[in-house]
Image: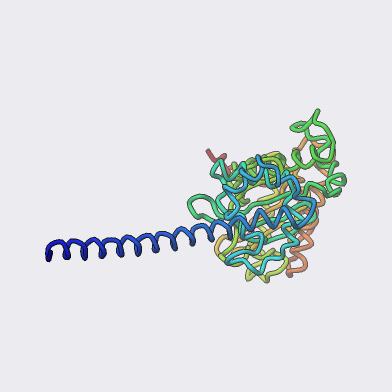
Length: 324
């Protein structure tokens, strides 16, 4: 009887252990389910917030974005980025953009989209990370902004994009491809521009230029210690772009130049840059040099447009070699 009682007691203990184990597993499962529900709030909030996202209710789209929704929560103001304005998301992330982001995530160009760092007439720029955790800049061009119609002068006459359609959506795609190709062309000659990392439709991924909390300031926002050195470097930038890369920036101003204390000036926003054979290339070059001279004069330099133009056209650049 004693043995039987001990056996029954042991069985009861095992049953209690099993109950406790099941209880722990049950709690763990409930926590996982709750986490999944919290993640899914992202997509659900898009579906119910505005008619703009009605398409996401379709099964095929919902299943796509369930895979990446927690990687997009930064731009929705979730988690560490709860300060982000939801209106920015509604303004930028339409159907085309979300599908482009999805494609770039699946191609392992983008891992997360975190928070906006810059806003312009044509695009928003977001801080993000790649699959290795490295910071990246994600430039998203607006797909419903008529401003691109005003930029047609920078596309027409560029033989690289001749014969392409001129519908608004086509103009956006052309503009993004144009910026990516111009960046690659300038970087090939060792010029300091962000390196393009990936592209799809209206989304361009580049090197991130800044620190953990903000991008580098614009040149117009800082006071440099040695304006002459900065002027000389930027004048050489224009000379190399013209003589070696056969490009004109087209909007060369302190608004489109970032400043790093370690690196110096870094030129951005090159979508409007045109090749030398463009009918307005010389006009744009004179305008670019004029703006640089004006910056020099404001910073106490005694420089003149005629002399600066001569330097851009005739500067000795034998030390500049094409990068592999």
